[in-house]
Image (tube, rainbow, N blue to C red; front, side, top):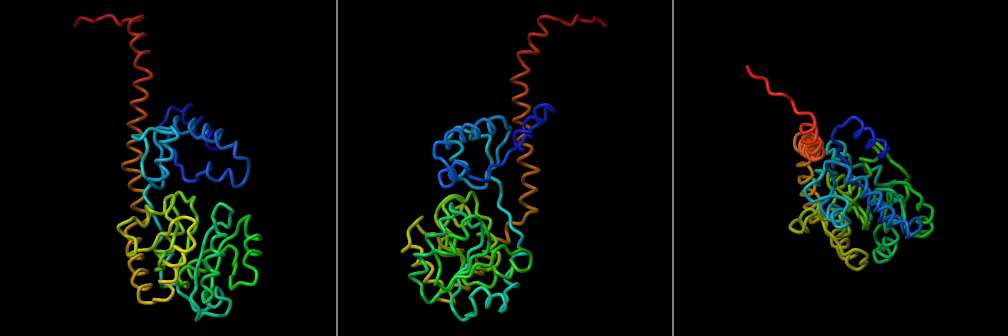
Amino acid sequence: MVFGALAIAKMLSVPIVMSYHTHVPVYIPRYTFSWLVKPMWSIIRFLHRAADLTLVPSAAIGKDLIAAGATAANQLRLWNKGVDSESFNPRFRSQEMRIRLSNGEPEKPLVIHVGRIGVEKSLELLKSVMDKLPEARIAFIGDGPYKEDLEKLFTGMPAVFTGMLQGDELSQAYASGDVFVMPSESETLGLVVLEAMASGLPVVAARAGGIPDIIPEDQEGKTGFLFNPGDVEDCVTKLKNLLHDSETREIIGKAAREETEKYDWRAATTKIRNEQYSAAIWFWRKKKVQVLGPINWLVKRLFPVPEVNV
């Protein structure tokens, strides 16, 4: 579709804004052949160099694109994060859902993970984490190609796999947990982290990809915690502190909720429309002048317009 959109934009001579929110080169080695990474970067460079502006969900992803030569720094903008803070809200907390997610043990500490269950999400790390938290329960909400393998990995452990949930059920699942965990190192943003925070859950996530944009260094320990990617002990320590301290959990969950209330979709889309689309139009006009300037000069030289005396 992106090639079609690019072709149509060029034919109609209109500005084009592209977004980059799936870090495909990172996924390729986990699903197919590593030698495909270089060709994929070539495709990404071709597409984004042809765009007038590229939107990225996090500064980390923007740096990757610039380093790969896919776009110029001045033609890249941060795509403001947004979350539906009405659909994801602490008011959806449900004892019935908690019983379901904890497999009938709602009094036990409950860790939640929501998202696509794929090999690139580093979910196998959570097996080692939960081995060190025998008193806790974990619920995986979502589906994906790695679900069957992950279920086998957690055989005999207090883990629940709900499959895909939507609507009120999903809202209840978020709000009924104690802590949200995100071990993935490949998130361009991590929308599920924002949804968990909006639901009043403290987050423990890998310090990678776009997650540090959501929980920056000066907010660590206030709106959530980050652990070193792949570091089981670091993850366990931060989870344990929250699971065993309901007061801290409540304070951080409330602060996380307040933080996400600053970012609604109306504000995010208004910024795109008023600022970022305007920047794309400016770059498009500049490029048009650069391309057509020499042609106009040549046409004027070859076919001068006679002066008219009035």
